[in-house]
Length: 432
Image 1 (tube, rainbow, N blue to C red):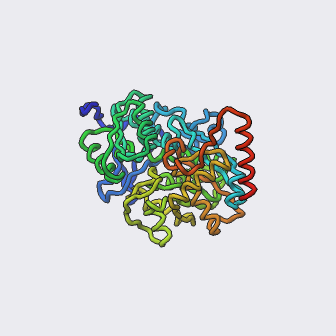
Image 2 (cartoon, rainbow, N blue to C red):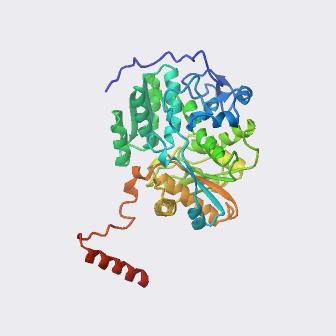
Image 3 (cartoon, helix red, strand yellow):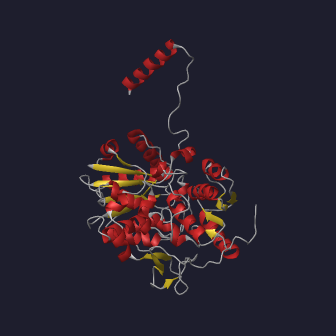
């Protein structure tokens, strides 16, 4: 394990900045150079990437996009890298599944599932944000990359850093699901388990980023990293025949994914790639960690931090960095927030698996469970169309479903025993 400072680059912006103009404060609008920085010096507002949309409009069209390989980089003018991406070139373009059986179970006219449970290489939407953050980190001269994570991000940073030959440190709560721990260790990353919850991990990482000068994808590289989430929204619009869905349900940890899907709809509208229309974006959380949805339901534009207690560990962020902006998006679009208990999360996972053959992790159970509530309450009308964003694979969180999905029927290799079992099952069905 290395602890040298030699991996710190000059932090200067590259001479070529692609279609990026600057980093811009989301509060006061002040602009900053395109370096590894994430907070405004004047009001401590978060920075985000500003683009030259006039230049992009002259370059990017439906025809141009359709001629490119089917990965997230087909929208590269709207992603914050200066040149060609160097990390995660095969990420994205995951299936948009028309979920007719699930639609009938939830009682809605039309339903789609955006399935990032099969994203490359680590089976979660985090591969999108990491490929952007690491490609930009390489452009800025970094040799060591790192992150604070509830699991999926750690997996993706470890895998993509390995493929790019970068040294990697990932910091996680020490009690994460084994699947996610092993899925970071296997790539040779330095995995640091912190005896505390995610917000404590994140605070430590901010200190380490300041002292060691590494590229922390969700600290000093956050403005670039967060933009990668837009690619999920770009794909949804293209896969729906260049239209924006009426309703989109997105699970929330920091709240960033929800805000960036909204931004993707705005950008495609601005560039004339889709017809401008009204859309609603709804947020989903676990009841055991629901600072954003609790605030939304109370009609507040601010949230109160909470201490997480939920099986949806990937969403267990008690002080969500983009919580304020997620609340703003839901309010602006007329969307709603809701949350579900651990039992409802498991029901959501099973419902998606039984209806569509998609095994989602706990975050996906949150999305399905909240969609079910919003449809039942009429907040998403039964005669409308909706997209559910599934962000990670169920093989990563099998502990959550252990003991809740029935048991195997064990018999000897004997036809008589099998037929006895078959008859027994039929009898039980008739009795039920």
